[in-house]
Structure formats: structure tokens, C-alpha cells
Length: 24
Image 1 (cartoon, rainbow, N blue to C red):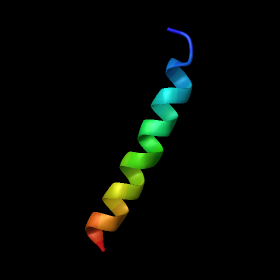
Image 2: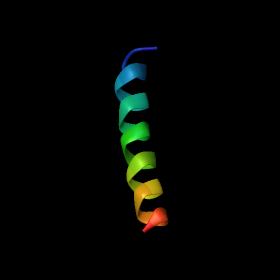
Image 3: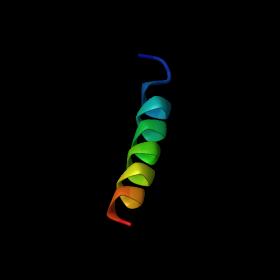
Image 4: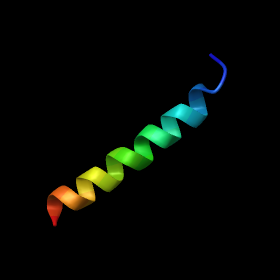
């Protein structure tokens, strides 16, 4: 479970970027 929060934040950041590009 070590680093789970960091990985989750990184995944969320990438997902948000992809979503923003998809909307544009």
C-alpha cells in the first residue's frame, strides 16, 4: 500500500489532462 496515494494523484492528473484535451 506504500505510494498508493502518490500513484492515485498521478493517475488523476493524467486522466484530467486527457479529459481536457478530449473536450477541446
